[in-house]
Image (tube, rainbow, N blue to C red; front, side, top):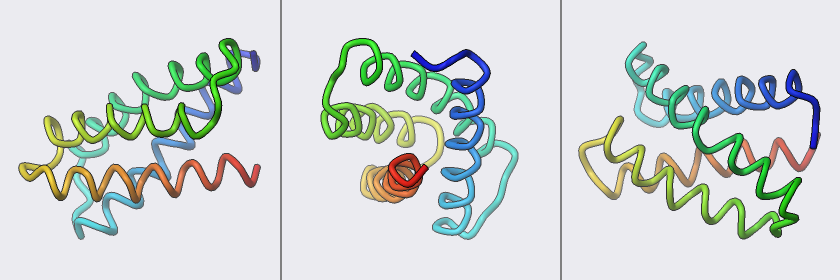
Length: 103
């Protein structure tokens, strides 16, 4: 398992990526969305890291689970429509997952 400061960094980088993607996609940049995304990522990122690093869950299984949870959370906190919540979660997660594979 990575040291705590790297895990905190991972949450913050994921949050910034997903906030930028969400802002670009929705064409709005609000403090409310930023806070919602911080809460979403503070929940899903540590659990995803634990599943991948401690339980050795396959990467795609972890990402699919995170996506399912984040669609629900995006719907509850950011978007009034399921289709938009699913699109935002898919695009934001794809961007952050791709970056995690590259780094």
